[in-house]
Length: 403
Image (cartoon, rainbow, N blue to C red; front, side, top):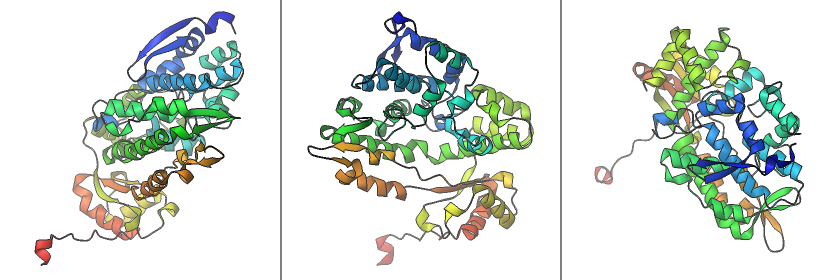
């Protein structure tokens, strides 16, 4: 690595963190075509259909994650090469995100048997790998950090730079205040013990506020039913392209939002219709939207595809007009973060009644959705109730009607 490359600083003005100092070696990575593609990948997929301001991208989130990591590694007693690895991993952690961010996750997982975190697979032979090599950095090592398979897990750990940035950033751009927490206080109270990040006892309340923010943001933004419907419509169209042989799953990683929209529109038929529906906000509607307590079967044993087929058979409605959305139950890794007390360490959930309550409440907030076109709602709802054994919602009556 060039000796003075770390000392030459530029800066980027960020809407969330203010001025972010950028060494010239980081500029070399930012200037690659693969990193610049992130300018054209929306951070929140289709959330702008609900929150018009949610047009921020993976580009600025990656810079924000880099900035938070830079503050963390200042307190790390390690050699400069390791610090450089961690900073690079923070910068590149989302570089392989496909169009519309997490909206393509299932397709990548099912058809490529991996995730967007597998940088070593997707960046092999790229300009990014060339720059890393020139800087003396290993793509394999960077991938291990991004996947959370290395020591000093500041990017993919219990309390990490990634989620600290996306919570405050997504809150800022959506206008939803729930994501706001005291990030400065939390950063001040994080420290390294050996190869792990721990929270000082003084930072317990700041860590709790992060968990509260996360709990509130999931149903309000990330799992808002309109966002889920648009995401699943896009996913259904994307899968049709792959099944029909019009698009290879591996090529999705190289595309951006604009390119996939153009591809869908040029495809015609069902794929074009779904994209036009999303663009014009003519989305599918909720036929069923229920929690686990009202479902009579184990949804963990049922695939969405099978459910769509069975509901189609029961209702007589074509499968392409039915979407079954069984979201994963999100694992709140933050609850396992280590807190340093005066004489011992404990998991965050063990020393915080608030965190324990949030963990239980998160399970209760889970919702399964079944969506269809407006004219098919009643038929799909009836068929879905039969297939899933869904109890009808009890009739609520006013007190003056009872007495």
